Length: 292
Image (cartoon, rainbow, N blue to C red):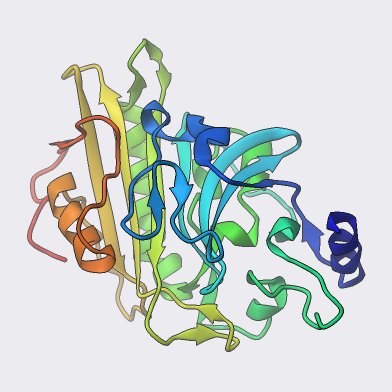
């Protein structure tokens, strides 16, 4: 059956990535702090999907190695989050076709569309105001191969171009610089290391190409060990996914306030990291202000 699905996708001219849809994130637990994925009520608990017909666990594999992990919502056709380890950054942008995940698709005699459970490149072809927004940004990848692995539509949501290329993109670059300077492996201070979760909150009704949910909000949070203070530290950022006439700064917030955001969007009970990351990595005055 899998070979048949691949054959059909090739007929449609799609590039695909041979990753793994798994029953538990224990298969690629290394992308989560202490090997423990987050808890999101009704979605993910004890490394296992709480609705396996809807939420699929993907260990994103590229060129025979795991590169990051994604929790994917096949109903909304967008990821809930992608999880990765920041260990340094690759310079440049890879030249690669957008890929899809064949394991998310089933095939039967009545199937008429190439991608039933995920977005496909054609969803974006006629778009000007929306573009493909990475959850694991290729600019946060440590090498060229990892950067290429991020170009799968299971790691992408429709983002307003002015937001993706404006305040959200600026924030991604700023966070990369902060992690690069202040995050280290607890056991080896010479190695850069931060654990990152980046997600999207599905909107109530907005759809791209009448198929793919256009998220209402984007969020990202990292936790890492800071050798200067000998503590685990974190920063969180979130913002509305909307067309921006003027670029605004997305300020860093502490983990307690981010938990409040998660409770509003997903319900109470979310647990993001396996260790206490509540110490806010504050670098400048005004970072943890009242702006939402």
